[in-house]
Image 1 (tube, rainbow, N blue to C red):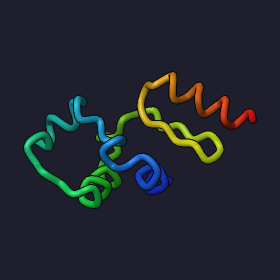
Image 2: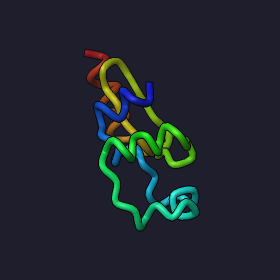
Image 3: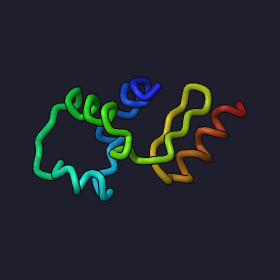
Image 4: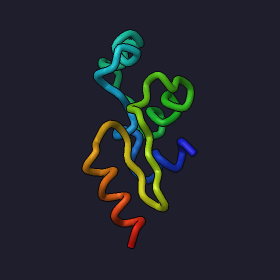
Length: 77
């Protein structure tokens, strides 16, 4: 399921680059390809921007209520 989020939103949209886990891992200094970042996120879920929301065919990552509302509206039609 996490791979689907990465395919739809991109791995960078799923990464919590301001979180403590990201800083503690020293990832702010690394340059990674989207595939490398996706593998890193799969290996350590503490690096994810949560919550991950999927409604129908729509996807959102993080606390972005506008995106959630748009997903709900599109699912209702």
